[in-house]
Length: 275
Image (cartoon, rainbow, N blue to C red; front, top):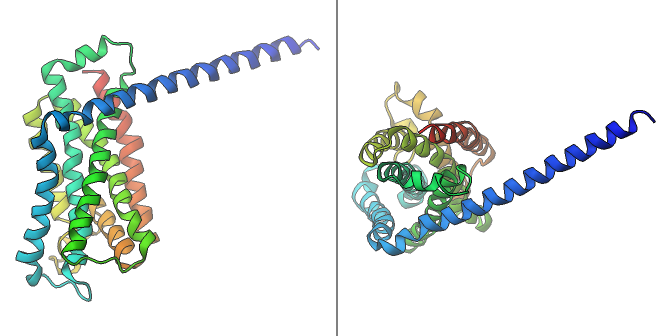
């Protein structure tokens, strides 16, 4: 009986804490949604950004398929079937770099100082950037698959695995966007962030299985290529779209995505708060 008041107080305190966390979470989600919309409407205000985001990947498809396709052995697969998952991952990664470039531009122009004067969650600025670029990546991936289908790509692994491809690619881009956010918060200069992101994305993309089979690369390069996170994502895309071992590539891809999101993501938020 003597412990009853203390237990009631503890339960009351836990209830208040849970209620406060729920309110904060709702506000954070609402603020993130607002920032996501703010980053998406820039494509309406600057149509050239949308045109570049969609036209450039389509040109890559035609370039690699019709110029290099005949010179690259891909076994039993047609090159367009082999190529599309690699192009999808490459394009969404380059799209994800806009998270860092846009954040650095906001820091450079003083927009972040204006955000900090508002009653909003600081993490919403990064979350809105990441969410917006993930949605753009999903749209571009669907558009590219439509173009690929027109010029001969086919899903040989079944409808539902093929349907999952753009969502898998967008999920991987979501994780990588946190890497871009960390770079953008660290560099704080749009030009510098863009240059640094290029030097990060370019080797990871081209030193992977995106465009050529790993076994055709020099022996000294294959160990790195085999554990490259881009290789896992590309191989998972091929397994989903063309049939193959899905689980063996799904776990590493998921692991890298979670690593980017839950390890690099908090570091990016911490770095942003210290700017």
